[in-house]
Length: 176
Image (tube, rainbow, N blue to C red; front, side):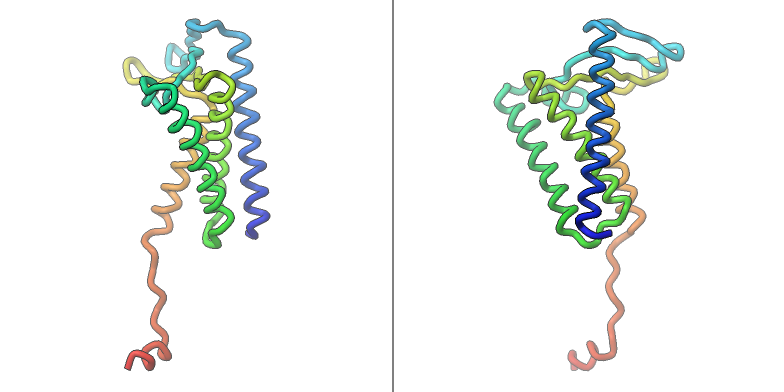
């Protein structure tokens, strides 16, 4: 796949993640009030709107505003730009890696949009679990990021370690 095609595919897929995430957030902000909890499937699926000023499981929520902005706004921007740079400059990316980058970029940009609009917070509303074994509260963008990371890991495991090209007879002549 050519670089322009990869870039276009990532932008379209990332845009889909952003739109879907922002629409679900808008829906649940509209129909639920903060603190309200909706339980579905015997409590296995909870909808509880909250603003998270940290990262995964509120990690970093206790940091100062300035530090949080550096880490969760500028740090995330650097990572997303790095992923797009990898997309543009690597000729070895397969479909799995391209899709992974799209998921991470879409989810990352959508959460970044929240942070810019909601004073450094991200709107989270989903919680899954059985009994006391539960996930943290998350959103659709987090699903995209997690899926992207899982795809990258899957792609790296599937690819295995880099192989050395077999030596050619002309290479052996030059070593003598």
